[in-house]
Length: 252
Image 1: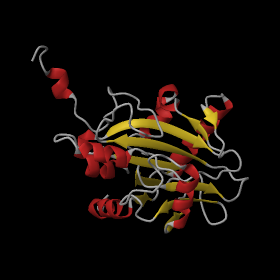
Image 2 (image 1 turned 90 degrees about the vertical axis):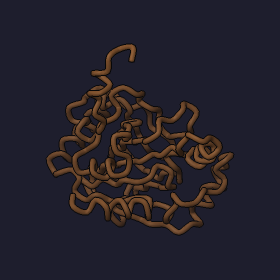
Image 3 (image 1 turned 60 degrees about the vertical axis):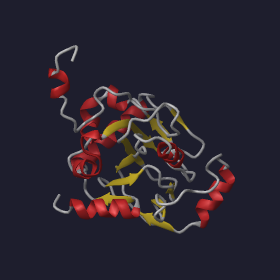
């Protein structure tokens, strides 16, 4: 990837960037089949009211097909360029939208602005940061499905968020300027976890699935308002060199 700085500039400016062809067609088909097999085995955590079925355990159940998506080779330069060895995998979640799907407007890191203000009150506390990488396994397109962001919505605090007033928040999001994108199978959309966004199936009959890896740079306390639970600490830093910690004599 020769244009990392350009990609990082776009991510910082727009709040998201699409890495086309992050997965090759064979990888797309292999992972897609494993996600569908997980549904057949009943491994889903649930199916919510907006039509989203989610799976939180696939990385642990079947590491061979899913582990390569963590710090994936095409995405690694972007994550490393933003967060370096402090890049921590927060969670690994697969989704299937088996029928009608119209996601509510939301942030993955709902508590970003709240935690940012808290950090400013303490001299050594950096503001927490979250980055989402979403891999797609079918083509989105006009009349099929899309992903929508509030234009540069990572740069200003949404209204009606603290405390959350869902109807007013939804109305506020609808009133903002939007950017609509149509990721293709194999694409990965990388975005800052606090930018408001919404996924929608326009054709209820099409197959739609994806995998989301949430990353964080600053380990967050358990009360931080995020859409997913953290996996923990050990083994969740894909770019860190742990040799120093391993070779440090006990008691030092």
